[in-house]
Length: 338
Image 1: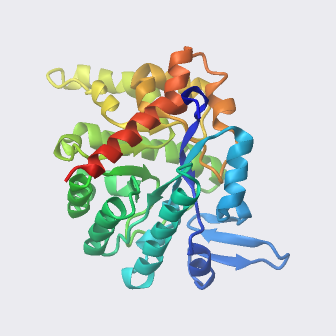
Image 2: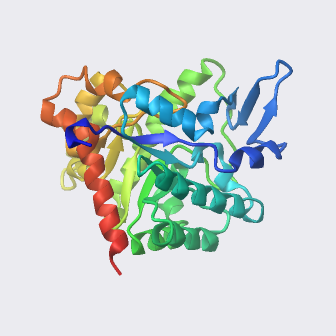
């Protein structure tokens, strides 16, 4: 395939690989149930939604990719569901089987499908072993982690063994909105729940995660980990000047490290051309990747966000595939090292 025709979606989710059967057997969130009208729904942390074939059938997903002109897609373990937070003795085997399935999908699709694995976070020893296995044996690029572990340095410190294992094996980590082990979902807003939670709160949470990484020494301590912040880094591309002003007026000897934002990786999932334009100016096109958030959103991410954006052709090409290709090549090089 000609390079200029590549379109690499670096933010999508997959609920198959044996998870359907696991969730059907459960009666507490998260679980699958059939409504009286015959529709199967996923009962998740903040409500329920129809569970269509898009969520768990890779053939349906591949057909959707083809219709959107996408050549590659990174499928992630559905971390926001909280499956990886369940007791390890209940879920560790199912997660390992799922990761095996992701690796097999990559082979069957000739590399068009790229898997981002899950780990059983209730048992860090098992989680570390799974990181080693998915990198060394399965060849998957990395894992997805709930972003609530990175709302503060104290919370991130609880994952030090896992971060060390990930660094040892050169691992990609998507920090996706999600709870920590033992953490209860916060109370729902009194009104306009979808907009308050799925847009305003979600974007704010992504910003908190990026702040933890750039204001600490985590990036320097774990140089072989590439951290992906979803949704263009939350609100940071739009409030960075305020952050700089706070530092300039209150901490004049310690400027806000805006340049460190370029040490992270980002996707443009579920956002549009105006947000992408702002993010490219702050973060750089060479740090931003295409993202769809499929199957939650089914827009063609290129036509929806990149094509109408006021960017140069070189910047569009960078976002569409070059940034992701460079990242994935780096990860494979790290995996091949002793």
